[in-house]
Figure 1 (tube, helix red, strand yellow):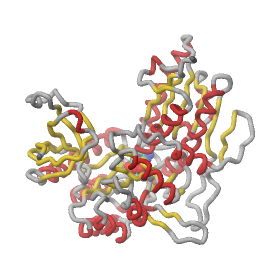
Figure 2 (cartoon, rainbow, N blue to C red):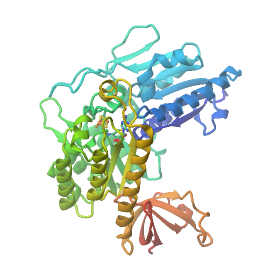
Figure 3 (cartoon, rainbow, N blue to C red):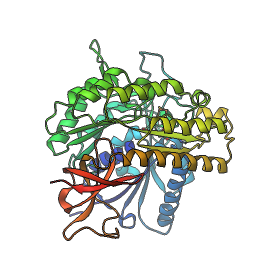
Amino acid sequence: MLKAVKVYLETMGCQMNALDSELVGSLLRQSGMELTADPKAADVLLYNTCSVRQHAEEKVHSRLGWACQRKADGKAIVIGVLGCMAQRLGKDLLSRYAGVDLVCGPGQLARLPELLATARDQKQLAVDEVSRASRPRAGKMPATHRSAAVRQGEQEDDIAAGPALDRLYDGRDVLSTHLPGQAYVRIMHGCDHFCSFCIVPFVRGRQESRSPQSIYQECRRLADAGVTQVTLLGQTVNSYSHRPEGGSETRLADLLERLSDIAGLRRLRFVTGYPTDFDDRLLQAMRDLPKVCEFLHVPAQSGSDRMLRAMNRHYTRDEYDQLIDRARSIVPGICIAGDFIVGFPGESEEDHQASADLIRRTRYRNSYIFKYSPRPGTLSAKRLGDDVPEAQKKRRNGELLAVQAQVSLAGNAALIGSNLEVLVEGVSRRSGKQPKGPAAGQVQLIGRSRGDHIVVFDGPKDLAGQYVNVRIESATALTLAGKREA
Ligand code: SAH
Ligand code: F3S
């Protein structure tokens, strides 16, 4: 019997990439390949990359340097770059790295088995031709996902990416989700918002919503295989809108209602929200549908109107505040997470303080805080100088993290004494390292509440994927700790 080809697949970046890698992993296994966690044991090295900040790309360059050196040293390996950086740099990656055999953008991943089969003999370039035009006119879907998936030098063919990607979902191996009992399900591709700093619309294309039927079927298959928590993914998931020819529109609230019917599913989540697309109907659906978790990830990016305008975010600080107030009044106990960028071009000390103030006002459960990184081709990189010195960015980043840590600690401390339902993810990385370790036969487990709080507690190893009730006894800014209730 032929030995199976061993593939090492490393994932950088966001949940979208984690999902893409999972789907790619299924596809490769179904094509007879084997996945390995050891890059040195692999015949094929694949890097699923992120372009959202320069730092993410630097990591990929360092991996490719290592892989290409191995190849130059005589190892017979195939090297592939997948994902956003593959889409962004395309053939430049092939010319920069003699050892790279395959470059495949996120819209072309369904073709990976075929591409790999020929990559050893001929370099393969498979990227979408993503339109660089700004927002499409309302109601008109531009042909942005035309495939430019061509062998070097060949002509563009005409496969649309949408149906090709459906192949990935249909073939999904439901038994290998990222955590026991949990799954990501993509409900839309791309983004139409064109925030001036963001590379995503250029590498993931325009917004396209999947049909509710195919999402429903995928969730049902997952639930039948034992998944109880589904997280719906989209760059701006609350902009989800699907309208068949002559039919009526399905929005996120409708989708949540439909998916709530699936027996076996206990929790539904969705990320990431864009601040302008939260109508009351969606917030009411969160309140009224018991399976929908009381959690919103709704990035503000800045607390200053001047910055929001320069970032091409389509809301003001005041409108954002109103959204948060509405969410808190409609959905009791809602937990909110956010993203901020520090050091955007022209950001003054006053603008920075406005962001700190927004963190205090919103009382985020947590915030992801990023230093501005100019991305080639984006509006802010083209038009605005990266004029906040690195040292200032670093300081502002530290300051916002400190403000958020205070807010998180206060929020977490308020939960001491309460009882939370926790979906167990597995053994915590710190298990066995605590000063007073768990009792014999037990380990420290980690899981998440409905509000997405990280909760640790002691229990038997085999609880991963189960729901338990935990009485909270102590809190830090990052985690809650407690005891499992019988
Ligand atoms: N809607 C997407 C956003 C993708 S980018 C989502 O699924 O979360 C994730 C975050 O990275 C953004 O919210 C923003 O805070 C940050 N980010 C994007 N481009 C950036 C850049 N050029 N520099 C620094 N941070 C950036
Ligand atoms: Fe990026 Fe803004 Fe879309 S952050 S993903 S362009 S909403």
